[in-house]
Amino acid sequence: MSGQRRSHRAVLQHVAQTNMLVGERSMVSDRLENVTQTISRLLEGYDIRLRPNFGGEPLFVGMDLTIASFDAISEVNMDYTITLYLNQYWKDERLAFSSDEEILTLSGDFAEKIWVPDTFFANDKNSFLHDVTERNKLVRLNGDGSITYGMRFTTTLACMMDLHYYPLDSQNCTVEIESSSVYKLNKLNGYTVMDVVMYWKSTPVRGVEEAELPQFTIIGYETNDRKERLATGIYQRLSLSFKLQRNIGYFVFQTYLPSILIVMLSWVSFWINHEATSARVALGHLQKVNDFINDNNEQEQKNELGIERRLLTMAMTKNLEMFDLLSTLSEITLEN
Image (cartoon, rainbow, N blue to C red; front, side, top):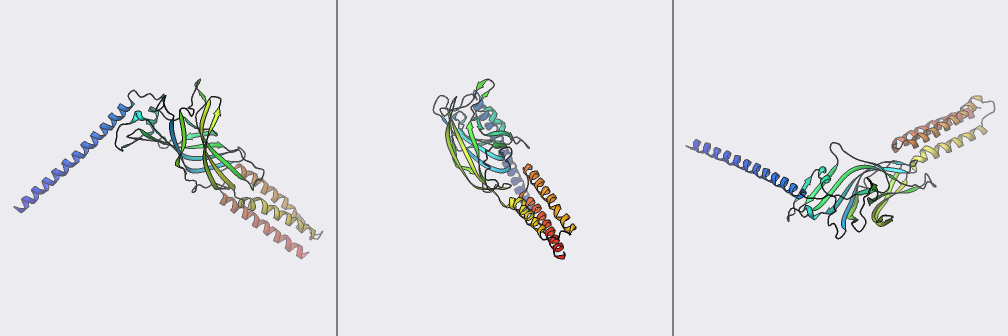
């Protein structure tokens, strides 16, 4: 009897678990169906050509940036390349679907079906959106119609540098964000401050402290906003400015110290006997060493992705070779 009871109890537990799983699957299926119907209902009759609150008060669009990496800085082209995450926040009451604090995380393709700000970088030279393994976009829709729109991309931005004190210089490089005000397809696109007002969020920038650059140190940054008056109207512009200080250590080992050693070695000729031909021949090779160093410096300046630690190692190796040459010349001088 006890064995039959245990068997009957196990059967009842199995049936209960099966019913629970069926119920959970049914709830998930119903929720997916409800979300699909909700999205279809929101997009029905939605006009992406009209901004939220069209004809009314200006729409406020919040911004924040996360710095992923500084990829390169070019003094020749007067620009720098940076990879970052741009997040934009606004509210579109046409997309409100619930009074609860419910959030829908949707694919980036959803952004093509709704109105999004026509944000661009005023000092941009070239940019591309990352698309591995999918286009790096994020859309989060809150129940009250609030939207978070994020993307990850790499951009090359103009940075006019003052090189009068090179290599003891410091530079200010900026990220200029604005609502588009250019002609596309024979029509003017762009929202003035009468339609869209951009602003920085409470934490506007992240990731600057962890970012590293070859040959530079980020000693500070600041954000500000201003209005730009153009021929087509007044536009809001957000600006992020980086204060960059060039690292002198690289140039000490690569340029200054070799040059000092070459000058010091040239003085040795005053103590060399005029009959010591071998010593004078060795001293003549210093010019070749100098040419090699200068050629190497030019090559490294062309290489925008040079690694500072590797360059310092190479420079120290050259300096050791020159010290060895100085020692050889000194021995020859003493022998004569």
